[in-house]
Image (cartoon, rainbow, N blue to C red):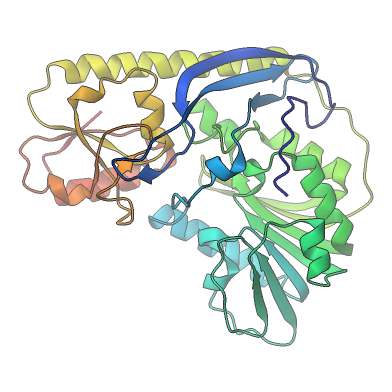
Length: 378
């Protein structure tokens, strides 16, 4: 599944003709938290565009053992993620029959479904960090999904494949989809969810593309990859306007399609992205320069790293706030800024919170105002 080919190549045309769009120098390679003494590593975060097709990638890649050296809790906290998981699970339930393979369940694993496992189906969940279970109808396989891993489990034919917020992490998305197609029975189902990247990037969300999400998997490209790997889209469901697209697909004959060249359109799109990011950081710095009160940054994740490594004046930041108790007390990777619970705002007079958490802004703001109604936001 996670094949590391240190090669910049278009996933559709196999073209190697790329040009650099922009780079953020010396960016932290991991988007979670570590202890104070951890030695962080940095690489340039470089966005590249294929001249022949307009596909966009972050390259070079980070070695996987460094990129995923521990979990950073994505998809674990908050009502939006909880609602996403419930909706995704409700779709899956209608198709549970026979042999089911879940790939990279994480915090959205089928383990958490309130299902009555029976002899109508058996689930194999491929997740290197998955928690083992005693349920006879659910086997957790602590391996990455691969042909070798499937063969080792004796799985020949699959009725249903599922994965959620995984495709955007895959280094070879077409190979990944082809492998699913190989094991899926004729007319078998393939259901997945992934970020709505075009909407996210249009809004300037920093969690759309990064070292972990190296491809600009906008909707038309995903549709194209599905067709040429042998899937027809039965239905798409849009979760929130700027969060996820859920695909219900079915195995079919592989089709040949030519992808339109979106070079000019995507080049303008991403040039606007970096320009707006830099303007935003400048605006924030102007506001916090003379602010009379304590200043906080929300999110021990890529959102905060993006601001800091584009030039946010971190000397003005008292701490980073995050709702995940597993992050509190540690430090945002690549910085010396401690992570605290938002509850620290409770007794602070006139606090200011820098909030750039994409689709989660409204939910976070609402919760913070319950803690301190006098909190101000940028």
